[in-house]
Amino acid sequence: MEKLMQYVWQHRLFDSSKLTTVDGRRLRIIDVGRLNTDSGPDFFNAKIGVDDCVWAGNVEIHRRASDWRRHNHHLDPAYDSVVLHVVEVADAQVCRTNGEAIPTLVLSCSPTFRADYEALVAHSASQSCARYIGDFDPVVLADWVSSLAIERLQAKAQRLYDWLELYRGSWEEVCYISLARSLGFGINGDAFERLARSLPLLFMQKHADSLPQVEAFLFGQAGLLVEGECAGDDYYARLTSEYAFLRNKFGLTPINRDSWKFFRLRPANFPHRRIALLAQYIHRGFNLFSRICEATDIEELRSIFKAELTGYWTTHYLFGHTSPESPAVLGEGAVDIVLINTVAPLLYACGLRTGNEAMADRAMVLLESLRPEKNSIVRRFAEMGIGVTNALESQAVIQLNNAYCQAHKCLYCRIGHKLLSRSAMKR
Image (cartoon, rainbow, N blue to C red):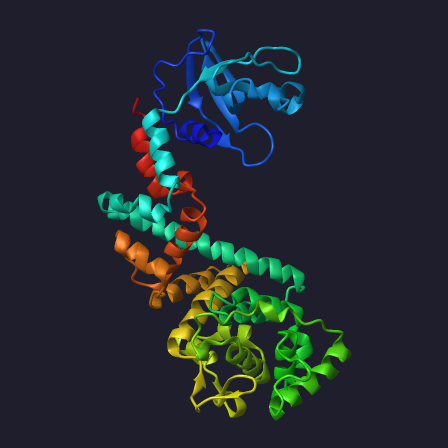
């Protein structure tokens, strides 16, 4: 329960008017310090008053005072700067490495606070706090949603920066990997990312004038071309032969074909057609990042990703299985998902990296202009009372669900904080 005590200390959720150390000295908390998320004392740069003296230094928090020795802090000079030891149970005296005693404060969590915290984290937060959402100030909720949207964009930007470092500053390569991941539409996103990262864009650009060769690259690397399968399918046989040549030429190793998921997918969303669409973008000349940066409005952005498959893929969802002819296109809703998950993060990340605030702002405006995503997360939070009117807000509630609710980080959620702070002072 140290996290609970850290939380109570950090947010001063205690009566500070009559605090004393365990040896009876009067204690004033001038500054609780800054939470340390790395090794070392829990809070840096705190300031406390003990009787008539003011001490500046660090604060360490434990469930029991005896944890100080159990963690070997009495032997670690990094903890000599601790000016206050905050505990729930004072079962031992603590000292610095030179034997000097450290003032100790007993600060216990109220039973109500502890019970409320355990009730929150025992279930998904969307279930345990749903009944309270209607009591919140709409301004507080709106501010939290805005912060979550920025937090999600920043997390996506960091992933793009990691790729940018791997691919020597090539934004087009980063765009290619990001687009591939988006075409997985969640369920196959990881597999598409592995596919793209296993097959450099540069390799395919050398053969971009031949669509069958680009498809052979992608389907082969996806592990979906196996010699001897799909007997009687001439196109499959051609791609298999092409890939055997390309694999040997470039020293390629395909990803595991079991990476691909089909369960509960409509045939139009099978990975085969999505891979064929990715091949189409590359065959058309992959300069998508440049076009994204130059686009002046949302319709121009949508037009970049409008691609129509022809030939084999108008009558196939899988290799070796003919289906009734149907248009093989990315619908407007699917294009908007690509704008949300690929275009907006790219604009935001590039804007921040280059100091182009206007480009970063374009990402925010784009998300505010797009309709919200339709999924179970968005529906659940809408039922709770967190209205979602655009893609910026739907991204925010997805961040709330993934980073806070599913991780049971109620202490760090503003909704959870409001609920818990009400009970922390109760005794």
